[in-house]
Length: 196
Image (tube, rainbow, N blue to C red):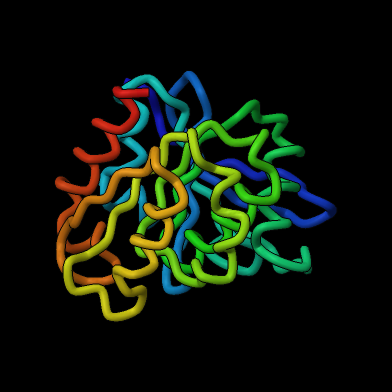
């Protein structure tokens, strides 16, 4: 059985904590504002990703969880620096809420560095609208809680309008839908990964 490891890496002089499990193409997980890298351990998502042949890397944003604080200008810039520091080749990235906005911002700025995206109740989507077509053709999984009061469904619909290769699913009810229905959430991610 593959073990889950706590690891640290220095990114632009800042000590960043992440959890890693599995082998294969890297799959980066980024949390929302009230959460941290361990959230995806608790939901079984890290295990689910490793089970289908990917290397799950769940990251604490700077100043969250066990990561030190540091100024990267934006969380999207941090993701770019993390990917470069780790020398990751075309990872798949998952981001929830605030993390979803960070992942989307990184992806539209550096589409050549991204294999695919999983956006979970991503916020701030309209500010990236003009750049969304850059991601058309890439596999994008959109997961929203059916009664998400933080990120409206129109955010997902906006992405679908510009990225024809995106697929939308409702899982659970609340904004942090992976807590409502962890199993359903993990099933959708595994299906997505198996289809790549």
